[in-house]
Image (cartoon, rainbow, N blue to C red; front, side, top):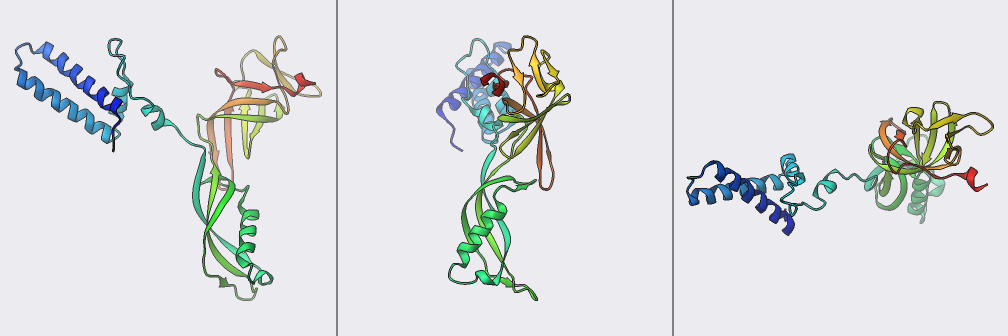
Length: 260
């Protein structure tokens, strides 16, 4: 693992600082012992960084007022950052009718694979957004009595799986007194009325909505909102999310009612 220059400087500063503080408690400590202590502290911090220890990241997050130079730029953020889109390799057994046998058999398999897989959801991997390539098509196995042939297919695809803490932009699909439902691509998200700002109240009528007391902000069907995922439920073929707009920089992005 290669350490950045800033990270090495940070480790050195902390080693010197700890050695200095220890020397204040031991005024008669020989200089050679102090250097040895400094080296041991530096090696200890270096070992923690190589092991990606939580203690190391805790040390990097500490910023005493008189040591503003100490920083591990992006280290903690990169460690905690999660992605929602992944490029992975999956396998699937495809059945093909004998009428498709011929010189274009592989093309027929690829077309059938895209129709059956794209847009589906797996609780383990998430929503399959698109197939980017087919790595391998194995030897077919004839099914007795039907004539169909089963081919093992290995393919690359982009999948989408939301995680807790992600910020999404979604379109409201339904509003009721319990809250509202919204969709962000293939993901359905429910926002409870307890997770809507307190100054917004539910209004019944032809178009149910949540409106602020002054009427300046309204959440109704087809409104675009920015929300934060606070929980997910994963089934075998579905991923359902719970969201909130009761936080800074969250809420309505565009209101179709205002445009009309």
